[in-house]
Amino acid sequence: MRFALRAANTVAALVAAGAAAAQPAPDANARHVRSMAATCAACHGTDGAAVAGEAMPALAGYPKPALVAQLKAFRDGTREATVMHQIARGYTDDEIDAIATYFATRATTARGRSR
Amino acid sequence: MKRRTLLQGAALAMIAGRARGAASRARVVVVGGGFGGATAAKYLRLWSGHAIEVVLVEPEAAFVSCPVSNLVLAGQRRLADITMSLDGLQRRHGVRLVHDRASAIDVAGKSVRLARGETIRYDKLVVSPGADLVFDAVEGLAAARDEGRMVQAWKAGPETETLRRQLEAMRDGGTFAITIPEAPYRCPPGPYERASVVAAYLKANKPRSKVLILDANPDVTSKPALFKKAWTDLYPDLLEYRPQSKATSVDARANTVRFEVADDVVADVLNVLPPMRAGRLLFDAGLVDAKDRWATVDFRTFASSVAPDVHVLGDSVLAAPAMPKSGHMANAHAKVAAAAIVAELGGMETDAHPMLTNTCYSYVSATEAIHIASVHTYVDSEKTFRTVPGSGGVSAARSEREADYARAWAKNIWADTLA
Image 1 (tube, helix red, strand yellow):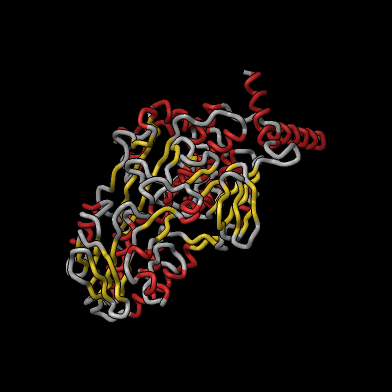
Image 2 (tube, chains in turn yellow, cyan):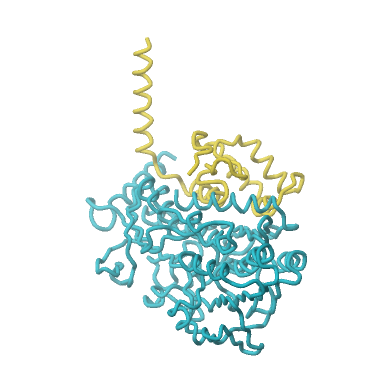
């Protein structure tokens, strides 16, 4: 049983690796969203993997509803900030939604990866 | 939907087999391992799924950060703290590092010649050489520099340590003077931050000394109210700001700087920043076409207006309105260019509406900092980037909390650029 499980896991891993290798390029909208999300990366890390132990939170794997709520709270001033209210006001509702979806689907294993 | 997916799979295959036959891959050569070039190299690899071959040409073995380098002058950081290896780009992302200087671009032949003689062919070229300092624009400055009497330390590195030693050797009661060229120049708030943190060092260690800021511009170029408040509050008798002071010549032996109109200034330590312009490589290749100083680009892709397969990033670009020549902005340019190059080499459409962000932190003392931030979006009707209405701004007030953010910003952008 344990062996079977391990074998099944290995097969799953191989399938996943094969799928990754054959992954199609993202479409135009997905590429636009990826680029938009990358405007956050200078402060919050590549794909949201911020440097651990510093002031900026990692965004990789951040739950979407929470991230949308935070960005909107920054934008309307209900959450106090030094800079994020000024940044958040640069993005529309739709853009915030798309960025939050992007980060929510980044691997959480990347979170806090420090370099 | 399915058909689209298939087509895009074909697009990636196209990247892999483009230009020089199926056996070879598309190759992008990146010149310059600073915030622009290093970021471009990394994101080209990431966003092409490692299908594009990326060669990074940079003569220096390591990256030395200009942001935070003023704290080395103030004795709060060591040069080693702001020096980072470029090897992560190779190890983690498969970028091929070539430690050499690019000496010429053959736009028609799509190749770059290196100082040691090698020639590298490219499908796309990214040039991110920073800004060149025009020493000849200030009479006597080039000679003073060659003799080791005056350093700029505007590109962080050995000169940063030299200037630090000059400040350490200065007597209590001495004068540190910094001259600022007319905008645009690299890092708009940088000279004012430098004056501020040097003033903090002198206040704590040599309190009878003076800091003089001699600015060719009519007013402080960046965050004027915040800088002036910090100077009035923290260094009222120590720091003096003089606008409309355009340096025209220096006499290194007499430690004197002369101005177009204002009186001569004698100082113990002189930091004369000359006017700046696009990197020489771009001039030589005929890619500088704006007021003879900067390279113009298509802001959707950062492709040169002159040579569409050459993408120019960072300080060398003729900036859009309210776009600073900063490390953060170069990092942002790089991502737009990387996305466009990956799309173009794969036969896909490029992003019609790219966005950029910028945040520049400046320390005003050993413990406090301020910032300026902006968000930019491409505007079709004007064919340029504009700041998004209502976005951006500066600090409400200088604070220790912002100094925390300044440190965190640096660590994160270093990682996003290099790691």
